[in-house]
Length: 247
Image (cartoon, rainbow, N blue to C red; front, side):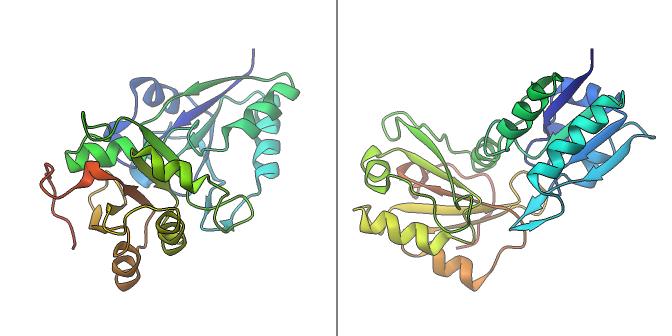
């Protein structure tokens, strides 16, 4: 029976791939991959596999979601072993729902292979627990922009009152708006906040500040790679740090 594999490529470091992901990459006939999946990971695909970049980044689409779904169906129906390779984890802001629904509609089986998500990779590099005992008893993953661009309709007040760790994916461009919304909802401007660019990669950059200061710090030194914004008391000064950061 034909099956499509939706594989999480992790945050960028090829050594963070799962053993199963590595095995399937080495067997696939065609790999439809996100733009942010780097060459080190793509090099692990079978030598004669067709690599197709279908990624989305900062609103610049090389393929619409509808086109990606159609490609998955066409390749699978043609008898190819298909891998859909997604940055991070397919089930965390990975648009897996649309692809699984389309495959199901056409009677095509699929299997999801989890990947390391950027938040846990960044936490490991920082040496900071996102759910530090006695400090942060909840963890919230948020999207930094909505489906039609702009800020999503989060419950800013509820998130502020949670007192937990907030991790904002794709939050680099909307950082000023995010900070303003949280401060308006009652979050202290001096709440620890940091931005992690290119988590897990050799060029990883960490900018530490506060909810109020971080937008200006990032504006002064704009990012060129994907940015993860992390907010909460778990990042207070004095926490363990194992890498250099920009202040």
